Image: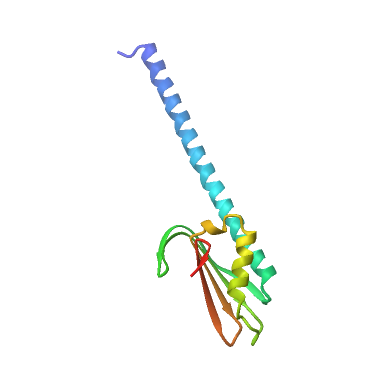
Amino acid sequence: MKTKQDVLRKNALKGIFGTLLLLFITTISYGFYEGATAHIGNTNQMENVLFETCNCQNVELGIAAYGIQYSSEGISNEKIEFNLTYTEGSSIDGEAEKLHKKLSEEIVLFAQIDLITIHLSNGVSEEKITIKKGIIQ
């Protein structure tokens, strides 16, 4: 037979468990939110730096993937890809070093991003820049 004390104890345990569960879910959700906004902020900031630095017509974000992934470049947690379009026939020589230098100066956590790929195209030739952990490959 259930006594009033047993019912109160059971309700108290439910309340404590519910509160702990809510606290856990809130903490995890906040972590996801902070991570997502940090990544989106980095990506937008990189896009702006690329546009200001290059003499190109268009800077387009191709892929911004966060989380464990495998590609031909290897395993990464964060992959960002940009496509830069220059005017036809303009020179893209030396752009890799110039863009890398400016990104490393302007982006706070640049060296912590696993993989950045930048495709340069001027209608005549194309160049692919791969940056892993802040180092041009």
